[in-house]
Amino acid sequence: MSVTRGASVNAGWPDFKGVVGHIAASLRDGLGRKGMATGAIARSPLPSALVAQAKSALDFLRGAQWDLRLFAPVRHDAALLSTYLIRRLKMKFRPTFFAASTALAAFALAASLAAQASPSAHAAAAQSLAQPVEQFIADFSAAYAELGLGGEMDLSYRKNIQHIVQHTDVALQQRRLDQLGQQLKALDGQASSTCQALQLRQIAFELALNQQKLRLLKAFLALGPQAVLSDQGLAKTSLGKDWYAYLRLAWLTMDSTPEALMALGQSELDRALTRYRDLQARMGYAGRDQAFAVYLAGPNFSYPDGQTPQVDYEVRQARVYRNLHKLFLPTAIAPPLIRRSDLGSALPVDGYYEPAESTFYFNQAQASYGRRNIDWLLLHESTPGHHYQSRYALEQRGCPVGLPHGFYSAFAEGWGAYVEEFGSELGLFQQDSDALGAVEWDLVRSIRVVLDVGINALDWTEQEAQDYWRSKLPMLPHLAQREIARVRNWPAQAITYKQGAVMLRQLREAARVREGAAFDIRVFHDKVLKHGPLPLALLAEMVEGVAQTAGPNQAPSLVQ
Image (cartoon, rainbow, N blue to C red; front, side):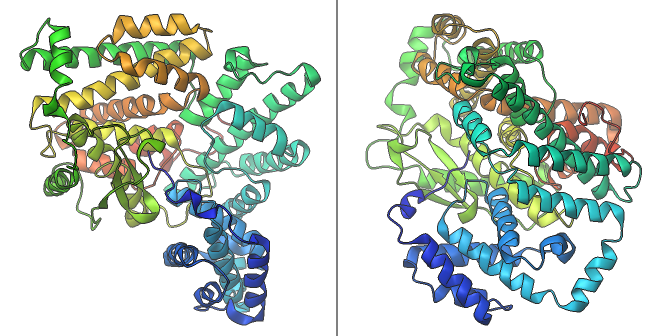
């Protein structure tokens, strides 16, 4: 996972509209020309911390290889262009980047780009956009920003539904989505490159997802005062099963059924339990669960007061980088910084990655910091997990211009969970207890899938969920209540880890069988990563090369 550090910096922030007006006035006076946007920020009455954030965000935006063709439909409108750029920041940095500095940086660069767009640049863009596919992709990007689509979903189903109900202009969105859908169908077979074909398929997915949302919203609104949005779960909410179907598609980014997900969760839980029992036996505690629990709770598996895992994380990260060549093609991706978080118990996780700072933070959320979490957490959050995956897409750039889509959690979290299995190859898991830590969290992620379906599709009671947990994971009783509450309040989100990881594992083994002796896991990982996060519905096509020939209308389940 990743989180936004310093979110409280906006608390009590003075007169946001006035500062934006000051920036806008400065830009209109000529400070928005190329190379002057930072000056506009520096001259604004901002606290120094926000000035630094704004400059950092601006550096990121200006360092990207922008293609003016993407901005052609809105190139004269700095406000609309800045809205699009803010969405790009959210997508690239992943947290909800609502800091005022981000808006200021985006506005500054928007005005700068608008000023840069000389008549000759406009003419070149217009000529290029004569190509119908490129014109459509640009139109879609502009419409996406105009309609306020995309962005990172809230974890809470209630907040998601409230936002959809309160902030969706149904008539406008329906009209624009229908227009875009008709344009997309008219482009069947016109994609001239792998990137164009991929982007048309991605647009098809986004259109289908939003059409499903609109159909559900209309049905929910039609209930009038009888519509119920319960705080007791989707099972108690009007059209709960329909909302669950929508949230599954939005979070998992592929078609799924409760029955298939239940089978997936049960299978993965059995697989993880087998690995757990094998490690328990290797550590000398076969059949002695209570004694094993006492042993694992002992002082050997936590850091004493006053000692942090900083050095251990740094040593392990260096070891991983020495072994990356076994699994990945050469890159220039530098390791992230490793720092201690000051969030503590306010964020109940042992670590997270902050993309905006290229930093992995370890966090002491409890009285002591557990040693068994070091290896798998580093793999998941740092390298080759979130840090490496996000930087790989930026450096390798499978396609020169991306789409303003939302963050695809099933891809990113699935990748983070998938790479945890490579601890041994990357020089980690040198003790059985280190591998056990990874397996313990694999158990949790697996049982989440079963509980998610049971609670949100089958209307399991709290007691039924607790009974299931105790029957499968008696060794982890302290996590039961938290995890049951999580899947009730965040339907489908917790499934993203396992769904993504299992798909990647299946695609890898299918490629191994298909290619035989020619299979190179480094090439496989390059295919997965170089285009950035994708809907899982498109991932198999991209990895297997199907998208090179696939047209936008060859996926009827995605275009409705």
